Structures are given as structure tokens and as C-alpha cells.
Length: 157
Image (tube, rainbow, N blue to C red; front, side):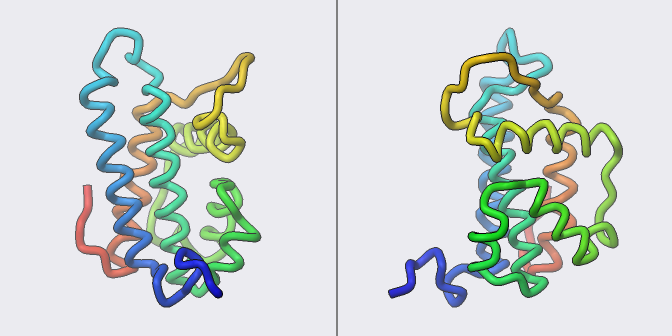
């Protein structure tokens, strides 16, 4: 029996984009409340970083699904590795619909190291590097806004 989230009839690029939108919307809402408190001037709260990371993952996967990458391949070949998803998306011409500057790409790469290793979900002691939130937010919004119309989702930021 196929698990519901592994059924290509039930997990579509459109639905994945909808979830990407909602995770990014939640991240921005939390940042508006918690992120404006003292101590979060540069680095966003950990839940905000997680939500943005999950939105980026879902945006990339919506694009990959739309381009014909199977759910099985997404699950087994890419998992939660944002960098691998981005590399595959670039192979499938993501660069033709959106451009990122070096600051945005740098913030994305720093986030991936934390997100793909689950350090935004589980406490891992030791020094860490965190992305500056402004460029990361811009990256996530640009990515989503470029992918949404392609997969048929009619909301944007």
C-alpha cells in the first residue's frame, strides 16, 4: 500500500506550492512578532529559519515535480538537502525564471547546512554559522514567486 504522501495522485506540484506558500507566510508572520524583539536584529529566530527552509524545500520540490521528477526520486535522491534540490532545479532551467544575487545565494547555502542536517529541529551544541535573514527572506520570496505561476498557484508575495 502506498503512503498518502508518496502517492503521485495526491502529492502534486500545485499542492506542494500551496504548502510552500503557507510555510513562508507563517515564517514571515512569526518574524513580524518574535523577530522584532531585542536579540533578533540580524539572525532570525530558529523557528523562522526552519519555516523558511521548509518553504524553500517545498518550492524547489514543486518545481521539480512540475518538471517530471518523481516523488520516489525526490524522497530517495534529495531528501531534505536544499543544495541538491537546487542543483537539480538548475539543471531543469530554474535559472531561466529567477536570478539570485551572491548575498541571497550565500544565505541559502548557510541555511542548507543547518536545515539539511536537522540543526534547526534538534539541539546540536557547538559553534554555528547562521544566515543573515534579509537576503534569506528575499531568496525564499523570489523563489516562490517564480515557481508559483509555473505550477498554477495564483498567490504571491
